[in-house]
Image (cartoon, rainbow, N blue to C red; front, side, top):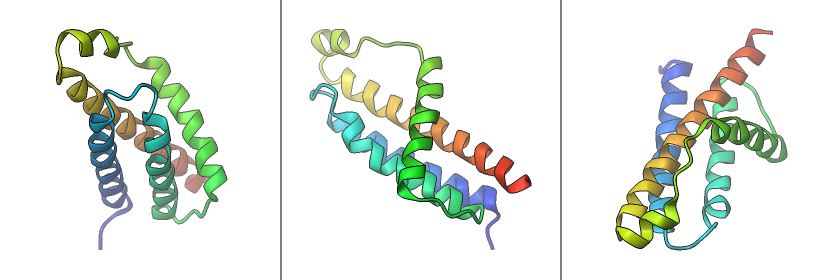
Length: 121
């Protein structure tokens, strides 16, 4: 039987791969990523909570997503995707998908830490 950490790792990796694929394909559509990524990341948070034996609602997971996203994105180095897209076609897709994967992974591990602490109480 897989440990909680193994389950969480699998959940995060699956969500990160899904978000990378979606965001890479949406590189040329400005500001479209949150509409596509939020449901995946919300489902990831619900699954991580469940792996810890904690049940949360969709609304609670969405609130946590926005909290974790603000923290993670606040530490992110800004990248001018529009400038890169104009000069190097195709590069923007790679920047988008790797950024989406990295942010999703960071959000997932933030959620894991949160539920670890909740579980310890």
